[in-house]
Image 1 (tube, helix red, strand yellow):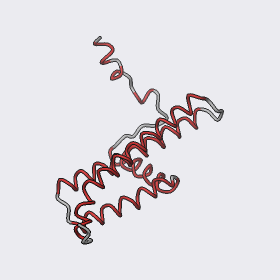
Image 2 (tube, rainbow, N blue to C red):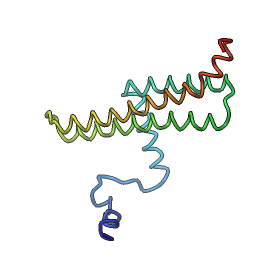
Image 3 (cartoon, one colour):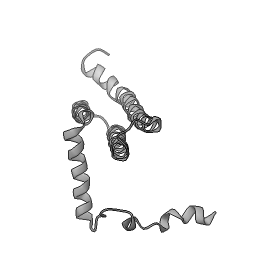
Image 4 (tube, rainbow, N blue to C red):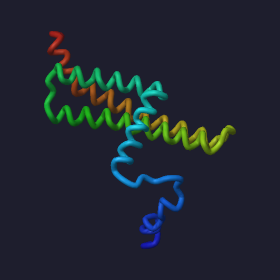
Length: 141
């Protein structure tokens, strides 16, 4: 049982990696490069960027509470993270094989479903937080 719990921690990633980051500045650079790749090459990420800015602008206009800000930020971050992981799964699968394989389809579809789940949850959270004060601000409530 102990070996099951600790076995993974004994694996040295340097032994299996083309290159590993040697310092925090390099790690930050790789992370920013990944984000820029997503914005440049993934259409859905650009849509998410616009949606994020709109939600943040509306939240600021409505002067939502700090707790509501935190919830909105978490919900939006979950969608971004799911999209990044989805792109990573797709890239790894595309690197592994160019041939159709049913399990590759499963992996890509499941990763995509994770994004969809995050989006649906974020929309529901956004409506719960933003709709009441928006309706009041617009004089509809």
